[in-house]
Length: 96
Image (cartoon, rainbow, N blue to C red; front, side, top):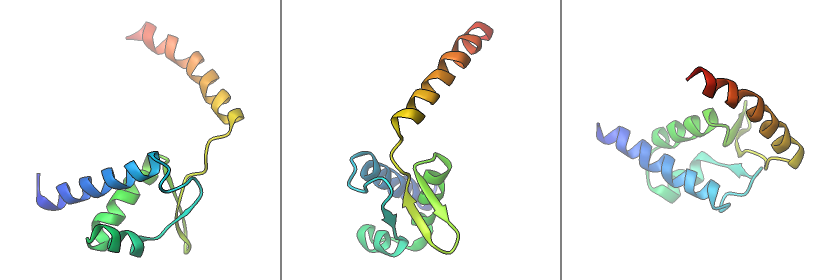
């Protein structure tokens, strides 16, 4: 693993921890420049980490605006996802 990959992973883990601990609250703006200063790294590992977090649904990128922490899930959405899992998981387990 290259040093650049390790750095991107470390930055990802640090931002992930901030999101999970609500140090970065749901829906709040995340600026690349602030993260660059906070972690004392270049823009590249920050963008890589944010891109990965976006793929996981933890941050949202809006064109020409930037990144935001994903909004907190509503109770209704949680219930919908739970019901979907109840439908899908038994069938998937039966096929395994």
